[in-house]
Length: 107
Image (cartoon, rainbow, N blue to C red; front, side):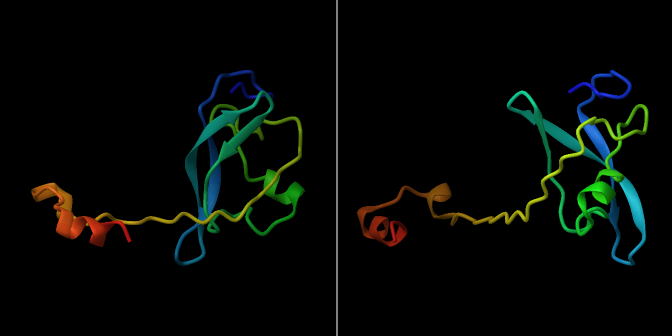
């Protein structure tokens, strides 16, 4: 995307997150453009703007080049995201699934 303030093409933004002791520090977050007018960035509840209102949350989103908020539009949508990770068994790595254990793995 192009920063709407400085005009430079950027592929990440700078935001601040809290560490385990409550101090904040800047991190680089990749962005993904979706549709023609939206940009998505993923972070977690440690983002310093997470519990703030829109105006205050916007103050913590920065262009890595000019340091300004790279958006002229102040609309912001913040979602709670749950990521579920499941792990497969190692059964099929070392041997073929036989008819006997095939039923076991389909449940």
